[in-house]
Amino acid sequence: MPQPKKKPAQQGLDGQPRTIEVEDQINDLFASLFSQPSGTAVLNYLRSITIEMVAGPEVTDAQLRHLEGQRYLVGLISRRINAGVRKRGQVNADTPTVLKEPKDAAE
Image (cartoon, rainbow, N blue to C red):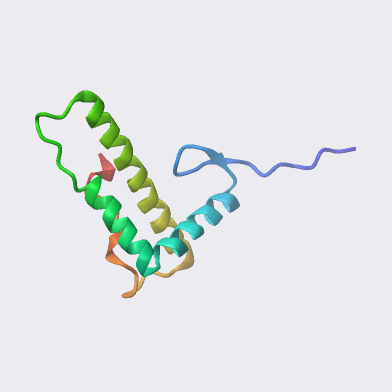
């Protein structure tokens, strides 16, 4: 019997191979969850303790690595939200401004 063809995987936003359909589904879930007022508040909180946090000269190498890992996750959440919103075509005046890419994400 012939084997069913597998859909080709692509590298997702998190570096994991997934089909486009699965990536779209994940991004849609993030956009749905964080478009609610409670989701926006949670994302604002996470950004305040990670991306907007400034580490002083007393921070250790381990502490800085930990903070950078947290920042990566919050950035990934923001990128998935943005991808889901773009896919839906929901970029409008009602879209929370928190969905913008963090300034340091391009670094």
